[in-house]
Image 1 (cartoon, one colour):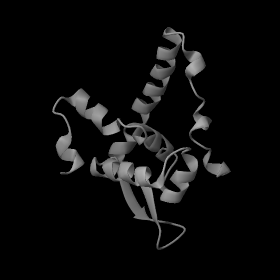
Image 2 (cartoon, helix red, strand yellow):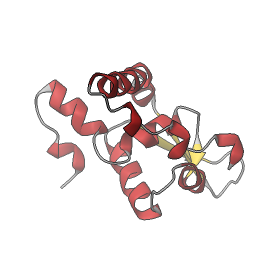
Image 3 (cartoon, one colour):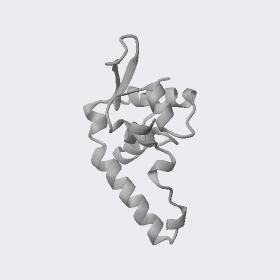
Image 4 (cartoon, helix red, strand yellow):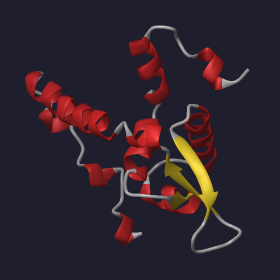
Length: 126
């Protein structure tokens, strides 16, 4: 069964289902920097396996958030990029980052927050 068929009917549940999972929001956040090949995404996201990355990319593609295009650098390679629908998540992801920090402050758990570069490596420093 396709992933899209499993989405809930309530809009808020649907939105959360599309971005939920251990890595989807991180992948979307990284793709906000522009198109990237699978190997680039693997290098940039610490701790993600190639198998899980590909599974999550396929689910995001099925949800219309991510697309594929031929690589600009290698005619046989494929790059993943955000679709306009995926790009529309930019302000929402920014808000979720801010809210996550706010939540940690309110519960006196700021010490548990990780800096972004603990999981996401800078694109230039691969």
